[in-house]
Image (cartoon, rainbow, N blue to C red):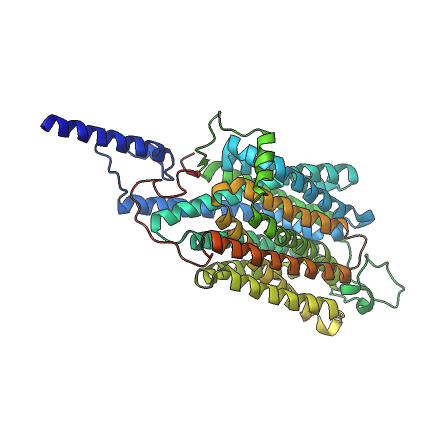
Length: 521
């Protein structure tokens, strides 16, 4: 009898070891510092101290990832804002941006799932960041033969970079939610809000650098006296230098100042790459074994297969709107409402206000969504954006109302922080089990919006672009409402909190067995 009990006990212990054998690799604490989980001395449940340590490890890596993106996009965002002004000859600047997002759209189909399954999220980010370094360097001598090839490189790298980041944050949020018992959607909203906050800080740092450097030797500010005729919604292309009786602001700075600015941006790009390579703990993909690695065609089919989900099809217009909206701010608002009226050296300051507002909004919206859900928040953003578009359409730039430019920058920044945070939270919640293909699909369609907006930028006026923006917003919100209804019917509402369940074994609860988790480098 005792022997049977002993055998039964041994079988039970063996089953527990087999059950936790997979989860040991999925711990996002440093497993090298822990005993073998199959050892009799190793407890099945995690202690409070272990949970706390793991939570701190997750938060630390989210901060490291976010800070590295701030440094990397300090360079890229500022250059993106200035392309339509610095390289306006024959539309080179906007053409380069069109190539970037066109290639990003194509690479989003093939590259991200394949690359992430091969090298993991961390090294996908490291490799992709090098493409941004190349693009910054190409601006030292910006011609069609240097800037366009560099745009091809960065366009190929952008989709896997963003997909890796989104997958990293979603995995971290899901794991943190299992440890703390918090609702998954709430943690994801908070993490994406935090990451978006750090990302939009790049608007402040990058644009501050550009304005401080480019305003040297510019003298006093000059407002274009005929701005009400040729700037704002009436802007078509950079107006020619008028007769001597019309005052104009600075359109293009000295080349030496541009070189100084680019040197600072190169330094921040290198620093971002080193931070990720050295300090960020990698995500170990439990499905990244050699037999499960995806080929390029398999990654393509995974992304295409994701489009069979009706929810994804319905939020495609909103994803396209995200790209068109951002392209307008970076490519049209900066040149039509800032460079055209008060000069290129003021672009940085105006966009810095935009970035600061978007950064603050990202954090606040992430907190507010916990209590209100996504639907009321995103509707509030739609109303604010509609008011912003109406002002942009009707306002005629005037020297007496320069402050309106900054008010518009605040309103656009608020909407940017709100929409960016919410669309990522929607994708993360809808497609928890297929993160890489889902976020690759988001990159695909948001990049399509970017590329399309930059593609028609040289052919239509700003007023027409504003009308197109509203069209995409209305269609996008309509599709989102239907997708939300399907989500509520099939699963649960986005604003309904998940049941809190105790963490019994590492990786035992739903969804953790199939996701990557943070391990030591």
